[in-house]
Amino acid sequence: MNVLKGLPEATVIREPSDLEPFLRDESHVHGVLPLAVVKPHGPMALRELVRRAKTEGFGLVPRGAGTGKAGGCVPTDRTVVVDFSAWPGDIHVSPQDLCLKAPASAPLREVKAAAEAQGLFYPPDPNSWESCALGGTLATNAGGPNACKYGMTRHWVLAVDALMDDGEIHTFGIPSLKANTGPNLAQLLVGSEGIFGFIVGATLRLTPRPSEFTTLLLPAKRWADLLDLPGRLCAAGFLPSAFEFFDPAVLSELRAHGPEEARRLPGEALAILEFDERGCTSEPFLEALLDLLGPMADGLEVASDERQRGAIWAVRRMTSAFLKERHPEKVSEDIVVPRSRLGEFFTRLEGLGIPSVSYGHLGDGNLHVNLLAAGETEPALLDRQLMVLFRLAVDLGGTLSGEHGIGLAKRDAFLALSDPGQIQILRAMKGALDPCGIFNPGKVI
Ligand code: 2HG
Ligand code: ZN
Image (cartoon, rainbow, N blue to C red; front, side, top):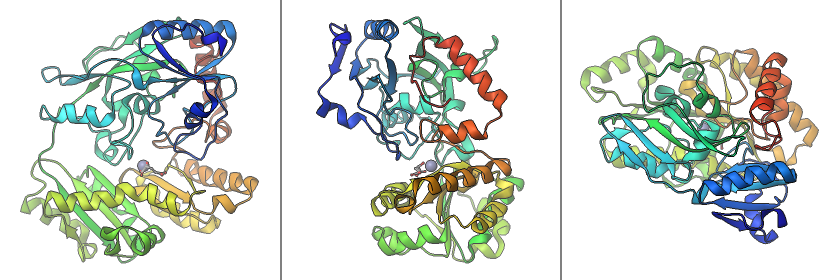
């Protein structure tokens, strides 16, 4: 592509066969062949890319490690993919300031390890944490099991460095929790999926690393019994660091076809509960928990060492890939339902007759409702089923995405289900920050 000729500080990929891997992320969305993929190595590349995008009329699509679940980094018509994997920078931890600075290219795994090496903790833990890049987690405001106690990626971002429409990298925020100088532009960029500008680095908040864990397998004799437990725990003053679940259908599939560790999983449905506060391994804590669980505690298994804890998490962590392998055309959603209305949600979902199975983050109401037969369902019917599912979540006071974002996958539904005033404001902001429409065109709004 001629318009990228002589681009400084960058590697440019143009061969159609080399562009193929950039057409997809981990969602069901397919992109179109981009004009090229650029791996910038320095700010001159970005400055030039912005300039040429404006003069030549092409869009820029940001990409981290391509592990997104909503098609946010998938190329649309007449775009260049900006792959941040070669963006320079080191991870620097400041234990005094309880923060860490890292480039977008840093693997999340290394960010978490750098914090841990200093006795500190960076909680965001999307399922892809061993393979995703920090930049992608910032653009999508990634979540994960620990969001139940610690919140989402955005709750851990103090400042971002971002490429904006003038072609320059600007820093928004300071390395402190206390900074109160008007609207928070760093937070506007986190979770914006690159539609206002591209995050190239960030300063992240850290907290002391938990040193005690209680990890429990909680089988339910009746699936419905699990559904009021997240609310009951919270109301009683317990705050699990993770509360995951498998509904009866997912549990049966895991038991019948999953790995060795999954074959022995008990119950009609199953929860994985983890606590990490100081004292959570003490007798009084466990007794109080057992009291609250009452008859549900029958069959409860407590991981007695790190190996058992690891085995429990390994099954949960492979569930998405396992189901995908068995049902390659499946569509997986990540709706949210308030904890207090989980029972009502599943009753109403059953009444709607949408064939689905669920697992995910019960503790914060973030449910991965999977339509396993999506591949054999007529596309218009599938769209209707998804809209009905999203509407149900919204009717109950929830939303259509808890952690994966909107991207391309949920754009139509997002536009249809949002307050038109909200969309108008978002579009006005997009127009002000990206007047030429070069940043991730066609995504979110
Ligand atoms: C998980 O919690 C991930 O396992 C992936 O968010 C869920 O495949 C999915 O939809
Ligand atoms: Zn998830």
